[in-house]
Amino acid sequence: MKLLSDGTDLEGVERTQDIPYMKILRRSMRLLDAWPKGPNDSKMYRYYLFTLHALFLVGGLIYLRNNTGKLSSFEIGHTYITVFMNIVAVSRSMMIISQKYNKALFYFLNEMHLFNYRNKSDYSYKIHIMVHKMCHFFTIYLIALMCLGILLFNATPMYNSYSDGMYSSERPENSTFDLSVYFSLPFDYTTNYKGYSAVFCINWYLSCTCSSYFCIVDLIISLMVFHLWGHMRILRYNLESFPKPASLLVESGNDNVDGFDNKYTQQEMKEVHNLLRDNIHYHSVIINFQARMSDTFGEVLLLYLLFHQVSECLLMLECSQMNQKSLIRYGPLTVVIFQQLIQLSIIFELLGSSNDKLIDAAYCIPWQYMDTKNRKLMLVLITQSQRSMNVKAMGVLSIGVETMITILKTSFSYFVILRTVAEEEE
Image (tube, rainbow, N blue to C red):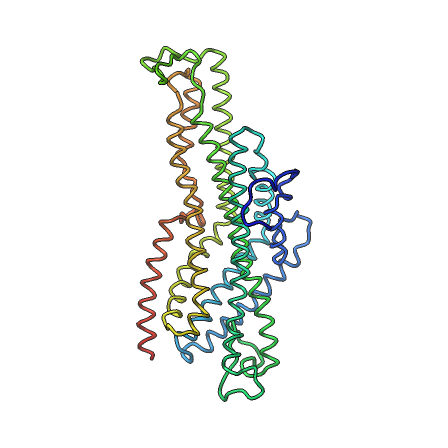
């Protein structure tokens, strides 16, 4: 599969499901059974994953309760990170079970995907190809990043255990196996090899599913935002290229707008009315899709932002030890977590910036040549264009660069406090 698409991979494609990057997305969703299902399809595997992560979340919380005060801030900080990651995974598994998630994805595939709009106009086709290239690259990039993250997250503890001599026949005294995730379990898995092997296998499986909940759901949301942004570009172009009266005089390539006498003809008034009505309807469809996204993903996005607020200061605390073991273990994870916050915020910021340009395009429509009836429609369009397109977490918190900067600033402040406490413990 090529990292960059030139659009030729769309030849012969008749359904959105058959687009190459959509096929990759569908295969990557198999581990979570996250491809949209009908109301009568079985959801047993989804319930199984929710139950599994919920049980191990309880095990992680009990481990924290039993070891808080016994382990140092650096040692217990790792479990805090994995527990918060598991909380995000549980919330997203609940979302995938919900019917509104399935309806939102079906609506995206069958209605809002730009592949369904490719034949509306030449510009629609151009935007469809551009967004297709963006989505193709982003899909492969994010899935490759997810696979690399899973490998590093689990391979690093293996290397630490190996370097500590835990795989040798004669293990060092008072040494324990290093693991990617710790739980409170009814058997010894830190010194017993059989127990370690069992938890090691469980951690690999949980890491794969948890990483998929993070990256695949982020990918789904990002693809929807890319297509929503593409629709906004098409609508803006429609408004910017709104036709003017044929009788309007043109002098030196500029419109002569000395008066308001050059009205649309009766036939042109009917065409203008139809164009305004179609664009208002198109904008309403875009707004409804944005509202559906906010309703579907609002809760998990709010929890996701809270996760970044907590985990990033903890990850910086772990990296601040500045030894080889901590940098190898937490360095890549820190980069990935920060990168996910920045990338998602910038993607959502696209919608806010496109909405500002849409407002300008609406005001540039030649309303002065219209009759009263069409001017009333213009007022509806201008009023509707004022509505913010930012996707909000639970209708409260706008997701974008401003929120990202606030989270980063707060995380650095908390990191300084935690670092001070950790130094006092030493």
